[in-house]
Image (cartoon, rainbow, N blue to C red; front, top):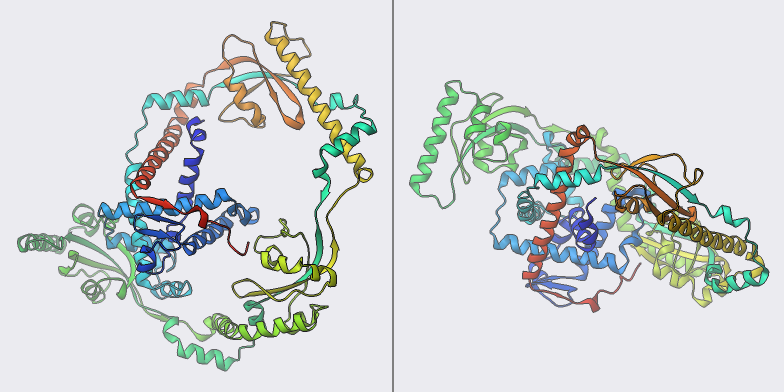
Length: 638
């Protein structure tokens, strides 16, 4: 429907990647010095650099995000192509440039927006029941500090501010909406005639010489690559953890030593009315703000509705529209004067005016959740799991040495190593480049393990490979059980397959030739015969149903006058189709009225993406980008 989108596919790919690629991939940078040094960079944006570590982190996070979206359909090799790698780098460059632009425009993120964004992440539970300890534990598990994570959130919001503001400026003219709607909802009544290859296949009887010649021309189709049946075992920290028994005494001791972690702090739910004061406000301005807050306090004492006053008077954009409601929070989520006041009130009580660095607040507590201590029995499974994981991490190095020694010292079998650690011996069919049917992270798609497996000595002796690290905390060894060198399947073995393919190819050629000949006759004025076409059907571009996708554009590009008009389309294996267009019907007015808003929204999104793309391109152009393509080689373990 939107032809310009197809004409700007490169731009759209970048935009879509920006939309689905989290800003955290950009902000996961370690240190100011590394950020502003250009040594070893894949690209520089102004004074900032993009390192290989930044790129690989971005690629890994993008892989995980796509895995969540696509599930079993995900194949990590889709991110290994030169084009995909370039798109990831382009995304990082765009994000660097957008951050520089946000800094130049002095974009400031208010605390209220930071709090609401953190609640929306779900790291602290639901928005209505934020748990500060759960939030902190989640950050610890990710190896992040609260200050660092919150700084990243501020930068992410700042990064999005300018693009969002630009996207909101779009207004689509009504005339454009009407024209696109009329074109997309137009209906065409047509009849079709299919020239199927099967009609011609029965008359095609190639001889042995013809079959042999086709076999030689298409020899690569019958190449059987080198491959092997292999056994392999994988040692992981998880496998070690499964063998660890945690005693009740150890679990209880861990609980007592970490009791604070299993305590939920007291939470308050409050609403507030804020009269904001700028940090550089004069004493007179600050006093005027205090007086306004005190006037609001007096109105509340006289019986005014808190939520109504918050909506009309509060200068906190994050809570005013919801009647000042801040949701549940713990003491340390708020600045101290605000927290001291809120935690001194009972449910339903309203504070006096409370000064903070943001201005003057009037606070009303609406609910209280007392502090709670989780019982030992309720957290025991979690504690045992943590102890196992900690012990397994500590024992992994020793286990890895033992595993390596076993597969080396008893090279004709993986059984001793598997038995020692309770591992399962897996079997797979692989080539030198792995097996695309297996998940990309499977050890038998690991480059170093495959290189060890297909060395001459491993093929000849069928001994174990050395233990190879195939990921963080994952060690694998493999051995060839049965080896098959590459070969071309001989003609006699594939003769029937060759015949089938050649007949299909020649039948398709005849179907296309017959269809094109009949199309030329119809266009030259020879009328359609009674049995040329099937029953008429109506097709709309916006709802094609089972109509062939390859035929949709040609049918709707055909002239609407004079009628009937004729269109021919090669449908591949289905043959050749000739369509007779007998009637063109404009969209029904009721349908137009029903779908007008939907089309306006789609067009607004398309225009917004175009404008956003222009903005991103201009920001990148102003950012002094330098690329180092010679440093973009593939990762080692792919």
